[in-house]
Length: 260
Image (cartoon, rainbow, N blue to C red; front, top):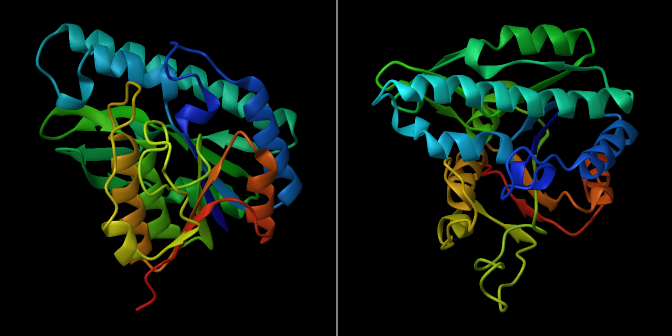
């Protein structure tokens, strides 16, 4: 089984509110269908979620009344994106079903308290493809906060122990430095957990309330500690996702699981 995280920066334009990259998503859906592997899919909130979440400062928790409206708006917008993702998957013969985090996840100061895994297990057992996504959720200490797609990737990897976790991003993989700002940045084809810890990471240039690449690397470190390999690849080149899923070499970065 594979766990695939579709980055919000790949399937949306993160600089333009509610801008879905339908052709990119359709191409990725075709690759997933062609590979014919059992998968759990997670997608980021992209410009559907990050922009309003930042506007209302939702990740800091409850501070004033208008944030309740912001929570509701953000939740509706990420569900809208989820519906577009589902439609693309279904159009490509993938029996995708949505599992909304706000109803199955509880946090306490951004940390996971509980998550209902049984619904994923039942859908997988019945040969469906579960699809979940970055969402706003209730938080015991803060009243509410954000459950990112990266956090979902980590906790689902810990529970299901997939063959690989695949992060579909808008770069070819992990670089020695930020390729958006450093022309001398080099793609790292493979990294161990120890090497990953030594990387310096620059913040994303676009609005992102869930940590950007720095937060992603922390997530990958935690997945590696479980002994699970993580692959990062460019979602704008959908053949690369297909090749990874069928075990062929392609341009990407693999972070090896820490095999103790």
